[in-house]
Structure formats: structure tokens, C-alpha cells
Length: 552
Image 1: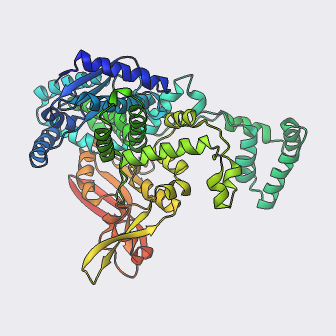
Image 2: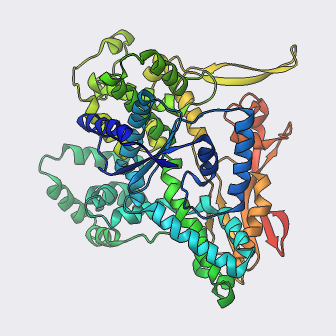
Image 3: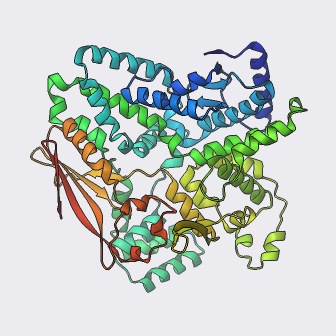
């Protein structure tokens, strides 16, 4: 591994100037390294961070990666990590013209890392420096505690997807005076009156509620006059509003934080070192949470800009065909499956086009004539500024839910693929199940990262028992992981662990494999039996490393 040559660095600095001219924003300092395929294989398990703590799973994945490379040789073009300064790695086989394209792609990633609000908790952290410090601490603990350090890492990683990312993000934004208004808005009298006072306190009828809305909308003397009448009718209104506006909700502790603060086992002097290990695993997970939640946007944004900027760069002359081949491999839309590069890039292009035409307005939404919709164009030409705001304020879930519409689905001939068994051919076959935007949107959302919401139920957490409650969202937990994960939690907690969750029970025909609930194109989408599934609450109990379960 070595730094890029001055010649290549000069090419990349020119790329930065062109990217900034188009509105991208990123730090001046970046580091670029030339790496071999072997380097890529060895660094990939550590998310390309050489200073990340050592762990035996990384070694296994390196061996697996080497075996895969020998069987299926390939050249990964680049990778970039969200550090300060941003670090990117380039394959030593890349020609100069390809590095130009790749660096535009990298700049798209860096711009996204440093401007998307879901990365706010990473903006002031030097990850490579923090990781090096953590690595040294883990090495020191291994010299003192031996294999127990790896047990602590493994058990902590078993629940590192349950860290309170949203709470951490909210806390970070609340501490930034520039961003606080985006998160916190004082409860207005209007919101309190219509959302809380009338509906929850007074429990007025629907007719009375609509009557009050009409009176508010037709009041020509302003809010002061309206609420003067409210106070004359409900003298207690002002006092109740002041109390509600003053309430500050204290965020609940996530499972990892609860164990750190309340585990009697970890409070013992000889076990206190485990807290440091848990905290390292937790902090690492929190750092990478935004990347997991913005995969489609991040890759789509980088792909959008590498194509846009590369095609306008005069240094590519003579390499247009080579670029077309590489770009097609990266951004082609598969008929079955999901390519985040392709989907994200085309959705950004669609958003820009719709905003340029002024289609994000009520006039357009209310149009029923398809021809008028197709020809609608207000020549607003504000698409460039609009997509910069989108990349700043959205994650994959809100991005897909907000902007995937029927026009987008029709433009790219997208569809939801169904899977069914062909008894005559004795094989599974795929077919077009739906071309509706809502169905396509639902299919994409089902593939997004969405860890289960499991919280500590304080009402039942007592007498040394940790009681966890799974908020059921029509997807059961993955059964293969329950036993080992709960065993790890029992070790960290130092006592019995209960987990309340939901499992399916079928009336009529049995559902034999409910693991398919996690597969958006699995046979469960075709089976009528799924309609008969009922859910029952179960409690898993892990005590003395033995798992049992019972119905609630």
C-alpha cells in the first residue's frame, strides 16, 4: 500500500475543482492510496480501516476472501471510508482515465458523508485515530485476560445492531445550535389544541372537532382572538398548555447502554474491563449505522456525479467506449434483484427532472389526464439545488417513500417480481406480479436495513432478571440467532434473560418456513396460506446457558 503518485494526485485535484463548480461540498484534505487485490481482500473484513481492532472473524473472512479471489478473480476499482481526512483506495491496475471516473465517484461519497444529516454523529470524529486507540486497548486486555476478551467482543457484537442510533443522532443534533431547529420545534397552541386537548383530554366528537377546525380556518381576527374564545370556554386550557409545552421527554436507554449501566456482573471489579470492550463495539457500530441506512442514496449519489462529471471532462477523450462498458456494469438496472447504484442514480435523475419541470406541486398531483401530466412543464429549472437538499436531509427509507412514484416506475419499466412453483416443469419461476409504484416501493422498503426494535421492559426487569420485549412489526426474529445472542446477553448481564416476542401459528394450512418472511420475493408472497397466519406471544428464557420457551 502506498500513496498515489504526484501525477495522479494532480488529476484528482482537478476533479475536486470541477466537482465544487457543480455544488458539491467537501473538505480540502483527502488521502488516496494505491493498493493491490491482496490488500483489498485483507482490508475488506475491517471495512477498509487498517487500524480497526483485531478479531478472529476478520481472519476467517480474509481466508474466505482469498479463496473466492482464486476461484473468481476480480479487480475492485476503489473503496472510500468516512474519516477525517477522507481516505480512498485505488486498485493498482487502474489506468489514469479510470481513476478520473473513480475519483468523481469517490467525491460523490465524500460529499454525501460530510453533508447528509444522518452522518452528523461522525462529522467530528477521526475514526482511524479512534480505531487505533481501541485496537491498542484490546491488545493490552488480551495480554491480561486472554480469550475472555474475544468472548466479550463476540457477545457485544451479537447485539451491536440494537444500539440507540436515533437517540445518539438526536443528542448530537441537539448539541449543535445550527441544527437544533431542524429537530426540535416548540409545541404550538394550535397543535396542542387540536392534537391533544380536543382529542385526548376532552374527547370531543368527530363532528365537534371538524366544527372547531372550520371555526379556526374562517377566523379573520387571528389566533389571539380564536384562543381568547377557547379560554373563555375552557379556562383550564392555558395552564394545561404550559405544562405540556414544558415536558421534556427523557430518551430510553438502549439494551447495550442499559447493560452497561445496570449489570451487576459488570459492576464487579474483576469484570469492569468488559465495559471498555462493549463501549468500543458500540461506538464502532454507531459510526457505521448511517452508512447502512443510506446505502441506496449514497451509492446513487456517487454514481450520479461520476457519470455527470466524467462525461463533461475533456480528459476522457478516446476512452468513451471503455467508460461506457465500466459504467454499464456498475449502473445497469436488473430486472430481478436490487442494484443500489442503479436505483439511487436513476431516482436522483428522476427527482431533478421532476423538479426542473415544477412537478412537485398540487397542480400536477391533481391532474388526471395522463397526456397533460406527460407534457406538464413549468420550466422551474431548480432541480440541481433541489437534489442537493435531498442528499442533505433524507435516508433510504424516506428517500424511497417520498420519491418513488408511478412516473418513475413507468419511465424505467420497473415491476415487482413474483415467484411461484410450476408443477408441470417441477421448478420455480419468476413472473411480473405488479407494476404499481406502491407495490414496487413496498418491495424496496422490505429490503432496507431495519433491525428489530427490542427494549428493556422495566416493569418485569427485577430480581436479577433482564426482561426484553420485542415490538412486533409483522416480521418474526430470526430463530437461528436467538439462542447464541441470548447466551451472550446472559453473560454480560450476569443473570437470567427473558425475551418476549411473536411467533406465527397457522390456522388451516401450516406455514412450515416462516424464515421466508424476510425474503421479499419468497414463495410466501404467492401463498394464500399466509392470510391464515396468526401470531402468538412467546417468552424465551435463557438461564444457566440453557434456552427454554413458553407461551405468554
